[in-house]
Length: 452
Image: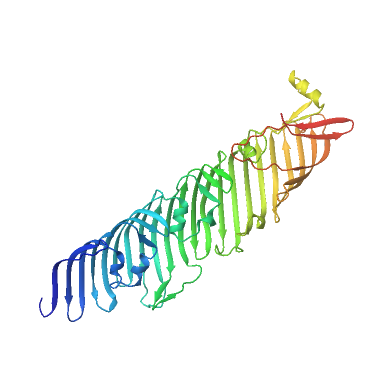
């Protein structure tokens, strides 16, 4: 001790809660600068009187259920002038709860000086498995009545519900996405943060997100009720606007690429635009999932849809669909007799169908209009138009059948109207074997379109 300062080189503090920090202390008299350096087991709130509100906010959602955290702390500044305080903190804790989620272990390396807090190494092991790691910086404006903002670069391999809870989101709002295993997710960007002053919270603009990029990869899972093999996404949030850079879904043996944009993701009625491109889907797998018969072939389509986030009823747009190398049955000119002739190799009265194309208009009210449907084969062509009513699960079509088309000695047309219920999507483990038949007639001939 001298007339300028007090120096304590070694000090140990014992606490009934299991805290046991040891270190040193320097106190200057004019001005009232100080420095505290210590290491050992402590509760984070012991530093609340030394640091600004950001320190309490950092630990606000975390509860240490195990022993006190181990810390290595170096704090220096001036009493009653928290804006001049600087700190370096390394802390590691175990058996914690963060927003109700179990955390096996958490560690961070923190640097603080006037105007910002920098967590350069953040690592958390989730009790449900996986890891959450990265870095964060909080920037405090000189104007203490202005909100602060954070800059973050985070990577997660924890289960999706755990990640959503950690980010302050409600997992039930994302119940439509269920990956089997925890996805790999990366979040990076800048975000406005609320700030407390004199017990009052300084509000931030809504939406608070500014220029955030979200990317991720997942293995198999369910998108609502649709099974997928893999998912890759890259999204950009700028203010309230959500724009996809890239979305790729591997499902039914093929790939679906999606692009979407939302003007304001917080507004359920905000305009939503979606573009879908599917290539190489296994048509047989799609047909079975929809509740139909087993089949072969590939399915491709392109769709442009517009609506809002209120639900599928709001969507409208158009699409083009192609199914190739499938088995759509045969047109048997002589009915059962054609089947007998086919059995002995005389197939002149049967016409195979193996390709389908359609132009589709998705209308509001869960109605799908099909102004141009073509089901084709080497020498037969079915042309039609109609509508599918998803709300009542019914369809209504008018079709014309052309035989020997392209014609070798003329074209024979038949017309038919058809309506039928739509089969429901297949639930897991369910199998159906049906034979469907659509009878067409033009006197005096009798036709049938049948699946074997």
